[in-house]
Image (cartoon, rainbow, N blue to C red):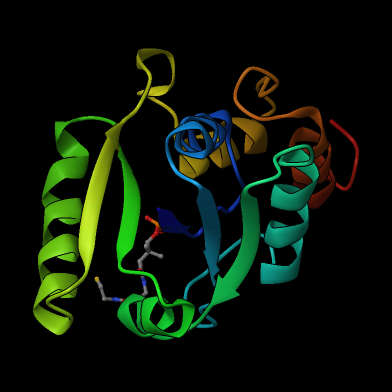
Length: 161
Ligand code: PNS
């Protein structure tokens, strides 16, 4: 089964990578779909987010990185796929995730959202938290791969810590 793992990935963290890794073992193909939304304030451009994902996902034969804009259900139709995976960290995620899943279902009856529970060790992790820690000079090496850490520090501090 082919599944789509959509998100902002601004930037990709070990939490995302854990979900992608586990999905790659359960499903025949995983399409990581990066939202290209000009109105959403992202630190990284869509090209940079894709590049970081591609670099960190080298070696996965059944994982593809793509971008989408507009409605997720339309992208799914375009890809001829009807299953989306979302990571679920804590109860706080639940309300928003449930709302999205139900709206998507209303828009496209055939679409299913599967929730994969985050590994305990990443349950606290989010791109926003990583950006905040980096902004104030904290160590982010346990939250993101080296290539992401470098890009993040470059973006925030112009390479200087
Ligand atoms: O990583 P994020 O920001 O939590 O991902 C959210 C995402 C990209 C999955 C969601 O915002 C999305 O699917 N946006 C596309 C627009 C859409 O389809 N909206 C209707 C469902 S809420």
